[in-house]
Structure formats: structure tokens, C-alpha cells
Amino acid sequence: MPAIEVRELVVRYGSLVAVDRLSFTAEAGELVALLGPNGAGKTSTVETLEGYRRASGGSVRVLGLDPVAQHGALTPRIGVMLQAGGVYPGMRVMEALRLFASYYDNPLDVDELLSTVGLTSVARTVWRRLSGGEQQRLSLALALIGRPAVAFLDEPTAGIDPAGRQVVRTIVRSLRDSGVCVLLTTHDLEDAQRLADRVLIIDHGRLVAGGTPAELMTASAGDEIRFGAPSGLDVASLGTRVGAVVEEVMPGEYRVAAAAAPATVAALTAWLAEQDLPLADLRAGRQTLEDVFLRLTGPSV
Amino acid sequence: MRALAAQSRAELVLTLRRGESVLLTLVIPILLLVFFSTVDILPKPVGVQESVDFLAPGILALAVMSTAMVGLGIATGFERQYGVLKRLGSTPLGRPRLLGAKTNSIIAVEVLQVAILVAVAIALGWDPLHTSIGAAVAAIVLGTVAFAGLGLLMAGTLRGEVVLAAANGLYILLLLLGGMIVPLGKLPAVIRPIARALPAGALSDALHHSLGGGHVSGSAYWFVLIAWAVAAPVAAALTFRWE
Image (cartoon, rainbow over all chains, first blue to last red; front, side, top):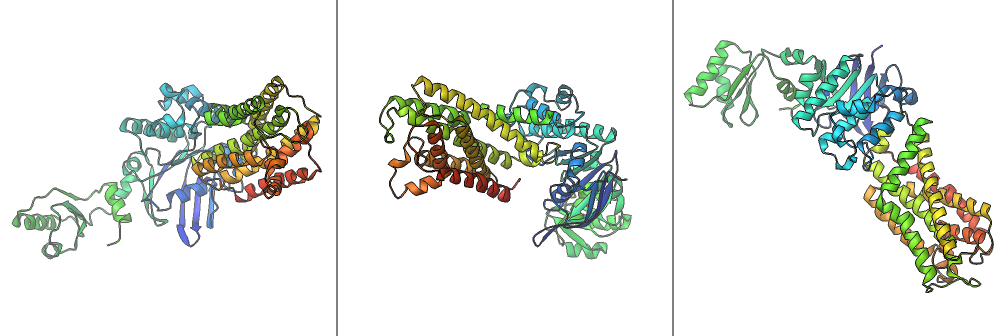
């Protein structure tokens, strides 16, 4: 039995379709990242799994349970980190941890957890006086305190400084290593690339690509060349020269829809040289996750 | 049990830690009681000799209103806005225990308020003209339920800042129209029936009837109080949005 099972999920708000027949599973000990632009349906999907909303169609199961109908049986076994807030503004860090610990049968040790997330020095500070990063780390700690079997982390590194980000990533990794199923939503590509065993790219409520970060990055390798050069090049003229369609995907960033054959690359650089244009960078073959992401979720040309 | 106890304690600690909440639930009622008992400028109902005899039951009604409606409403409104209620929804705490904890916290604050206010009133020479503790407790319970319903009705539908403004505005309005410091009988004849139909007027009538300090005729206030104690929580339950 998978820890998370989403089958043909549809989430509608009135006439708006937020999630459109999405299917995926995640296993214990697996870290899956839902990646997508704002409004792609990530949060709607996660909130359905957490039992906050009903599926308009299809079905979801977490640890084999229906998150709405069997909410009471599920809550002791999941940990939730919301995108923002979630803690009494006037409550001290230590008090929040002790309170949440009281909800669970076998919670983590509060002092130990406090030092794991690096909040020992602000243990007596109230929530609203914490920095954004400290608030995020407290939210993460509150998600972990009940020793969940499944953790839902919504944008866990948003608004955190680089050092804090490292702390969060280390915790999330060790969580996965201890056998927890972690579902992470993010639009931070670096998070997805560094942390996830599997990345699911969602756009307009649909799954547009899925696989390990390495698979995604090489999936469409070889069928395009990317290069950076001054903006506003005559792409039609260049296209004729290299024998493939050339697009300016964003100002100064170009895509040539052709395999990175040496002859094509030579034609490209020759054309630039004739016009005395500088070449900022040239990439072919293995793409970054960002390339994959932008190509799949960017505005359709 | 452990979760309920911890949640109740947390709700109470947070309430007592909020300065504006202590101001509204304890400082203002005590100030009004002491000031108007010693400075004899307010009208008294017919047959009442000492101001404190009328004021003590009225200020107890004010205390109930401040805790159950204003304090609960504002706190819950901000908890909703900050996503606290939403976050608790995915913990094993559950809504019944959350409501139970809020109830426990309100009871604890009210016990504290009654103890302090009664002590202050007695020090000021309060002599309950006739006392029916049972009726007074029943009135306080019904009033608490009615006002908590109103507080949650606001908290579940409005933004935190709006609840803050609305609850404080209602506090002043009902303080003046609720027979708490100004006897209902002294209000203009046009306003009087409206004031008696409001939960504040009904609660202070019930407390004046059971603790003395002004003759209250009939028992219509019990029906008004019960009606509010049913209608307000039902309206809150039907309209409450958790996020």
C-alpha cells in the first residue's frame, strides 16, 4: 500500500478547475516534490490529502485512509506545515511545542527538537516577534513533533536565509531517511533538485512531467540548444541559417529547436561571429531542472 | 485528557497575557464599579438607596459580556486569520476539544471576574437585597452562551481587525443600552423595548432580579435570554468559516 495515493483527482472551486484528473503515488521513505507555478493546483492537492477539502472527483488515500471520512484516524499519523501562519501569535516557541506535543501519544522530546531546528535561543520568544525564517522552522518542528508517517510540507524553505535553508534541507532529508513519506510543494527549483527522489511538475492542475530530477533533466536532452546573447536578435534569419526554429524565450535567452549536432552549433556561432555578437552562454544536452520547468510551465508561445 | 488540559491552559494563559483583554474584562468593570459607586451621579432605579446595589449586578453582566463576546470573539477572529484554527484542524486535537478548551478558559476567567467584582462590591458596601444564587448562575450561564455565540458569529465571518472594531463598538453600545450602569427604566421610552430585547438588557434584568438592585417585573427577560442563547450559537455554527 502506497503512503499516498492520488487517483484521477479533480478539485473544483465553482467553475474553476484547480486540479484536473491528477494521479500519483508516494511510498514510505520517499521524498516527492510537487513543483509548479503559483495557481498550478499544488496547494489544492495537498489540502485534499490533509482532509481540508473534499475531492470534487476521483479519490485520494493517505496511509490507506480517506482524509475526510477517516480524519480522526489519520491526524495522529500525519504532520502538516502550512504555507504561512498556523501558530497563536502571542504564544512562545516553547509553549507552542509543548502544546502540540500534548496532542500526540508519543511525541518527540521538545528540547531536542528545539535544538534540531536551531530555535533554542528564541525558546521564550513569542511567535509574532520571530523572523520569517524562525517562524518557518517552528512550523516545521510542529509538523514533526508527533512522529508522523507522512509529512506534508508546503513551501518549507520560503522566506528563509541560506543558513536556515540548509538546516531545513538537512532535517527534511533525515526525515525521509527515517522512513517517513514526505510530500513537499515548492516553486524553488533548487529544493526540488537537491531534495526530491521524484519531482512531479504540475501546471493548470495537470501532471506535465514526472521522474527523478536526473531523468527530468535529461529527458528532452539533445533536441534543443539554449544560448544567451543580446536581446532582439533576428531569429528568422538565424533560423534559416541553422535550419531550425529559433525562439527568444525571454529577453536575451534563446532556444534552437534542433539537436546539438556539431554542424548546427557551428552554424549558430558562425552567424553570431559574422554580426560580431557576443555569446553569453551555450547549453546543449543535459538541461537544468529550471529549463525543464520553464519549458513545461511557461506561457505557451 | 492531556490534550484538553494543555489546550485549556494555553487558551487561559494567552487570554491573561493579552493586555487589552485584561483591560476589558477586569480593569474597566472594576473602575466603573468603584467610580460610579463612590461618585453618585448616575440615576438609580426607584427604591434603590445605594448606587452599588444597582451597579454590582449590572457590572457582573458587563463582565460576562466582555469575556464571552469581546474576548472570545477577538481572539478567535485573529486565530482564524493567522491560520491557527486551520492548523489545529490537521492535529488530533479535534474541534470538540478545542471548543471544550475555550469553554474551560471562559469559565476560569468568569470565576476570577466574579470573585474580584463581588469582593470589590462588598468592600463598597454592597448588600444584595435578595439573593438567589441559583438564578444568578443560570443567568450567567445563559448569558455566556448567548454572548459567546455572538462573539463566534463575528469571529467566523469577519477579518480579525473588523472583529476587533465591531466587538469593541458593541461592548460600548450594550454597556449603555444594557441596563448595566444606566437603569433600563431611565432610557427613552422608544429605546426601552429594543434594549430589553437585546441579550445585555435581558442578562442585567435577570441578575438584578436574582441579586436585587432594582425591581424587575415579569419574567420576559428569561425568554429573551434563552432565545439569544439558542439563536446566536446556531447562527455562529451555520456561518463559521474555519479559514
